[in-house]
Length: 201
Ligand code: URA
Image (cartoon, rainbow, N blue to C red; front, side, top):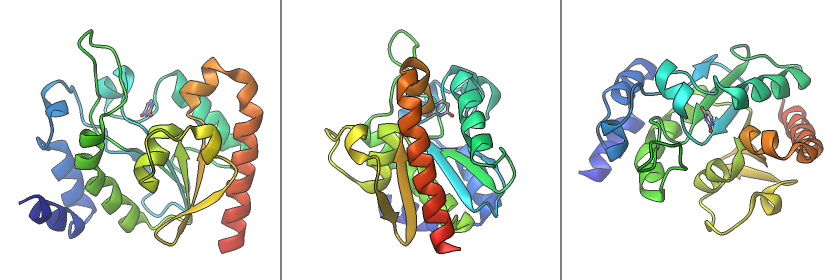
């Protein structure tokens, strides 16, 4: 039944995928969500940015990266000559907000990420971006299927592949807001991503 679900998702068009996500009850996160957060942007985008999962603001609005971290992500994209919604697509590993027992944001658990992953895989397959930027550890480790103990600092600075798509790992914008000096390292990562982009086009 698990593989049937994955096969069904892998065959969906964009509209079917969107409605499958909005009605999804495949993990417990559906019980506490306000809205699902499918993603935002251009369905033919060459650039795809992938975060962790909705926080409080995103859960309320049904849109990814609408809080302070989103503002920084917008600024990062502008620094690259990009703009939200134009040639960019922003999505998350999980489509529903994970919360702890105090109703605070938490990272998704491996099982939640794994259950949600077929949706993101289908989004990637339908968009076929030229480059993927993984924002933070959760996105990087889920997309690259690496050992969860690997720190982001060791994933940066390298061009990975997701299938045949170049994937660059950088710090999550929410992390950068707490660690401003690391912004210069994030900029180096984005420059590497721009190089990978130019190398493929
Ligand atoms: N952090 C994320 O990883 N994703 C969002 O959509 C918002 C904050």
